[in-house]
Image (cartoon, rainbow, N blue to C red; front, side):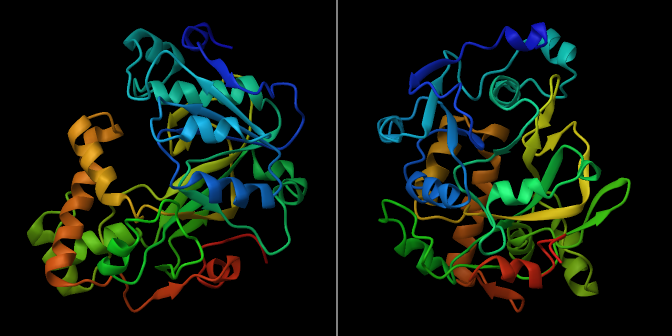
Length: 341
């Protein structure tokens, strides 16, 4: 382990030492995730995950107590916080473009618990889909050396039919994955040999922000011209993420969406992302007032503006290519899940 990285390894085990347990591992950073954790654990247990390692960033909603009761979960804590910055000289020594502590936490989880083995690295609102009956171990057993050491996923925002449906979810203590959810049913990313995947469709948030002239990465006039000329929607959020890694010493997370490992050029996994969820307004309030969220709460500020605009003008999240989600095959048919033919 690099000396600059080891300086920030102050993890202590809060509950259940599973360090020596041999099982497929999933790691995640969590903060107040009780809305997602019960279905999250259920989902990944069904996929064959046998060991969960969470870094709990000072949750106050019962997350720690809930995880303490789970026999296959190890909880870690740090004296530092997710939003802390590391020393500039340490970021330079590690070759990091950012000084965010959370990147080091991700690197530490790999180096301490998942070296030279496949493991999942996700957030609590992200649900990976595989073909019916396939476990994560079944999937990794088929991976050859030509797939590198990282498998990327297309992050697909899931949404209800309308803003009213979203408001009705506000009182749900836990997200209900069995409710009616939709996604943008078209190819999002196209794999290319020797290059990063090409963005074909930038996702539902980019689509909705453009529709309401709210995309901060595109000027108002440019957005109107794109609509008039039928040009591509401007990008907004990153929709590509490395979720399945075969860890190695010195691995570097350049961001939560980028890792310096050779990635597969023939497989793209579908990752359901429940950004539009019941407590979204409460999350927006916390993120925009606390300043602790990455990017200073800007993403949630834009979501606040979007939901307000939709409430006034168009309640519907859907468009002509929206698909009601029923399972993995929906993503395969849409060209989102790649490499499973």
